[in-house]
Length: 257
Ligand code: PEP
Image (cartoon, rainbow, N blue to C red):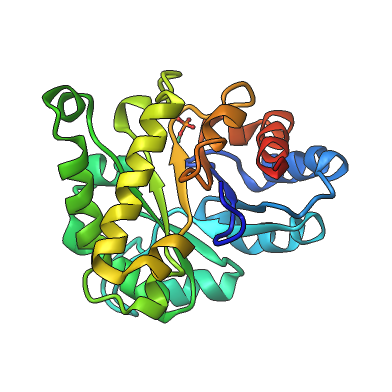
């Protein structure tokens, strides 16, 4: 973390979990245990049907709301999709773009992801862009080449003033939902590499202000060590964000200096 230049952001990704009533139970449980410190920004990315209620429910505990996906067009015949404007009006401030589950199960390409980043920025939503390598790519030794390509595509045609608002989540695919976390050194090395790619495109000023999260089985036990890496500015958390006490422990780790 380096709070001098950029925000530390802990974001939960609920995926396809929690109905409205389950979300209310979560809010009732987390409200009394939410830390008072505002050192890190806390976000919950929730199913689209929950956004509007979530924005109201979590306001008093200073948790901002995000969507888990968006379309890049601003209207049209795209059954089942939602626009960035719809998400924004519902109360979201963030949107996850290019999660590996969307790349894998819905064939999302880097080109579509770039269009989504541009659409989100145009609507003044903060994109959380997910990048990460498969186990095969890591074993072949092409992790950084693959991630550099994903980062370059995500930022294509994004002006510098907007680029500094983008959050990148480094999520090794082999670590998502597997309980197998990257070591702090592996996470730190790739996050440093991502910042170097951004530096090459936009220069040092923009690069040092971009928040780069780690995601992949981050939990209450390993968060502090991962967050000690200078280029790891927070976390994108799946499983552990479904349990209020675990999520709060991760927030506490991120609030430490
Ligand atoms: C994720 O879904 O982005 C994620 C990191 O999940 P988990 O924390 O469960 O590995």
